[in-house]
Length: 165
Image (cartoon, rainbow, N blue to C red):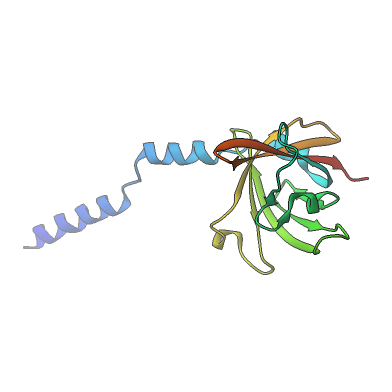
């Protein structure tokens, strides 16, 4: 009887300590691997200077489910690369003012993962976010490119940023 209990206890310890499948761990690590070089390049304060829709200048876009895309022109963005936090603020006089903390990262596929938070909200509680392609990164400018569906066709929305002085 004691021998049976001992074997059950050893078996329970063995199975309780068994690690997760290495395939699942590898897939998770690959999908969340960060492009730290590009993240460091975006570190700092930026102004969104232009929003364009290449080939479709007459569409109306509600950016980030917040406001008309043109309201983002002049908005200020701060990206902190060592903790992937920051802020964004809409400041256009003809639009409703808005300010929010953000959490962001750039994955190894060149996509900026962006979460816009409500005040006091934890990023891990926010399930919705945005994936935007990062392009044209220089010391003084970069672009974020969103894809939207317009009448069954995928169109780009290009957000142009300039480093703030």
